[in-house]
Image (cartoon, rainbow, N blue to C red; front, side, top):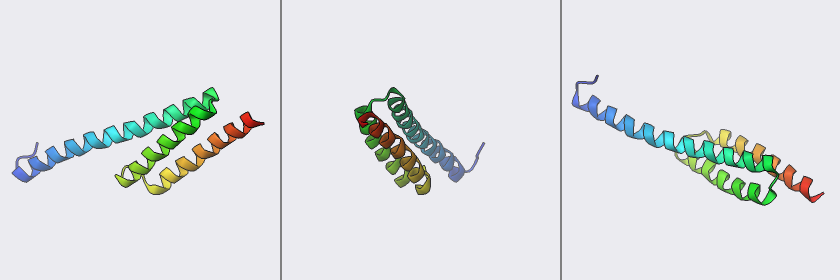
Amino acid sequence: MANHVSALKRVRQTKKKTAVNRANKSRIRGSLRLLREALLKGDVAAAAEQYRSTVSSLDKSVQKGILHKNTASRYKSRLNARVKALSTAKAA
């Protein structure tokens, strides 16, 4: 355990930052899961709405430094392709 005042402060800061980062990662994973479930159900409207909120949470995670911008971009691209494929399949 840390004995110096500065080391004790760093321990406190690390705990707080870890809790925030864990909550943000959990929010992203939950959003991705909800979108995948909407895609599996085949509900175009729900999938499109969930896609918008998922993209928003991914962009916020990039701003907060949780995800790399290329990782978020890859997620968005692949999810958009799935939403688009679902909507064109239902339209045809």
